[in-house]
Every structure is written in structure tokens, then in C-alpha cells.
Length: 112
Figure 1 (cartoon, rainbow, N blue to C red):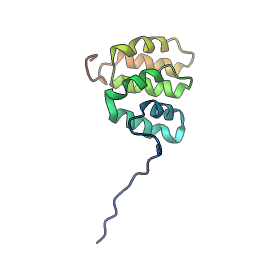
Figure 2: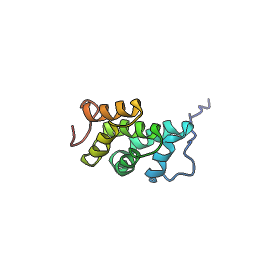
Figure 3: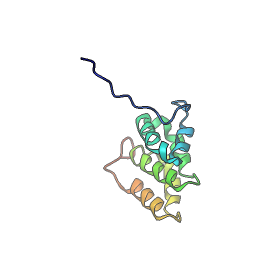
Figure 4: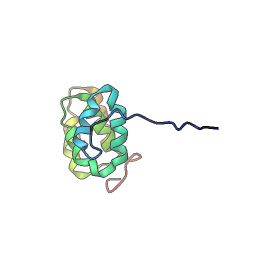
């Protein structure tokens, strides 16, 4: 009997696994956003600088995703940008920033 393995085709083809800035940019592309988020979650703290930069992105979905990521991988350097997002015009960005700042349950690392 032949068993077929389930293969997942990457939507991030052509993006180097360590090009975290490009992966954060891919959060703005609907068909790439889910895999980009998952890859950044799997990467963890190595992608923190790119996640922090995503808090300044012009696309609200990227800001929201980076707030959600930083909710798990909070670091001190992200705090000023998260606080600035509390004043963002989009209520979803504000809510994601508030959650990232206030929720202890999701945190890993020193900020827990």
C-alpha cells in the first residue's frame, strides 16, 4: 500500500527563511499572510527587529499582525511603538496594541 504524504506548498517561494523583513512585508498580502505569521511565530525572537519595524508599517493588517506576534515575544524595545499604536486611527490596530501590552497570559520571555 502506498501512503501519500501531505505536502504543504509554500506561498512564500523566493523569500529566504531568514529574510524577516520581507516576511513581515508579506503579512500585507492576503494569500501570504497566514504562512508569514506562522513562520514568524516559529522563528521567535530572531525576528523581533522586523516585528518591531512592522509596528510602523503603512498597512494596518501588518501592524495588527506584528502586535499579535509581539504579544507572544514581547521585548522592551517594542514598548514605545506599541504605545504609539494605541493612538492609531484604526480601532483594530489600537485593540491589538492594547492586548499586546496588557495580556500576560500569551507572553514568553522576560516581559512576562
